[in-house]
Image 1 (cartoon, rainbow over the protein chains, first blue to last red):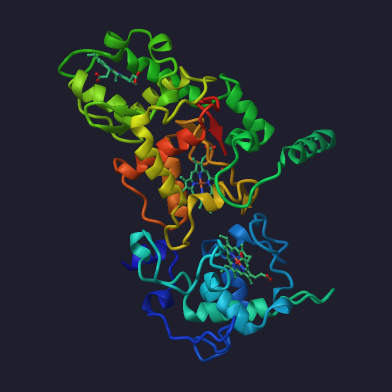
Image 2: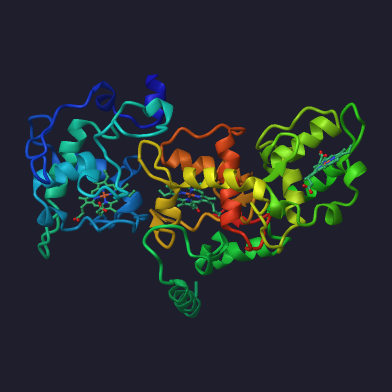
Length: 148
Length: 261
């Protein structure tokens, strides 16, 4: 089981975790899923890791990354466009913001069909990873010469 | 790539960006084979038989075609004679409705029906060298001919089920085939052109596979990418999807054996 999990790139955190409760207020989840602030450096690594899928669709301020998608907005400046709470809801369940979105829900396990067997009942990212990504995205501000 | 070639390619690429609808099926007049998205070198590899690695499979298939096997001691040629005449246009109208089974069968299943019923030999495994070779040989006899998939009215309910599967979101990423291949076909998923998912070239040589593969293998690749549970090779959903894709590509020329990145 753990070998399969490792093959599919599941973190142990995602395996251990039933979803933690969260509250949506308007278009945001104001409070951290873990009760703690995420780490932006770890969040950057989560975003860049191919298996976490962001770069399939998005581009961003990562000149070292050769293959970036163009199905979604460039992530540069997203921290100026959205608050931390808005970014958190976007990561947890983007379909709450736009039911037709193609962006996967990274912290959701219900309402999905035919999920590959070893992944069933598990969110794509753990609560800790979501918080790290939110912390990283918040640093992507539109300030010329002060990227990241 | 020389500067002038690069500019020519860029102009061509711009000319090919047609107006597109944001949702729903690709308009008939906007349909494009996956080969039109490829680099010129890969296109040349496909169109030149001596450079096309898929042709090895076709040659292999021609040998198997004449080989006597099974308790009936017959070869494909014993009954079908010269494949270049008897199999011309056949692949262009598969999956086809099977009168006995009362459902559509794809070309792989059709070959295996002949193996079992007519040659009295065991069926070939999906993705086996032999089955790929025989289907490549048969597909080659339709090269350039227009796809005529799904025209038999008995197939209509199965085409509709295939369409429904194509439109349904699946997997941990909660994506439907249509999200990429109808709504975003002109974009890139990381480095790869998404394309419109036309099944024009199967079985084909994929550079990433370093070998021939069937349409089913390609579909499984996309399902794994969506983190969905792939359908079994003989699941009705698989043939229905193949059938829907062939009917969606009706009129487009067969390219078998194609080459893809």
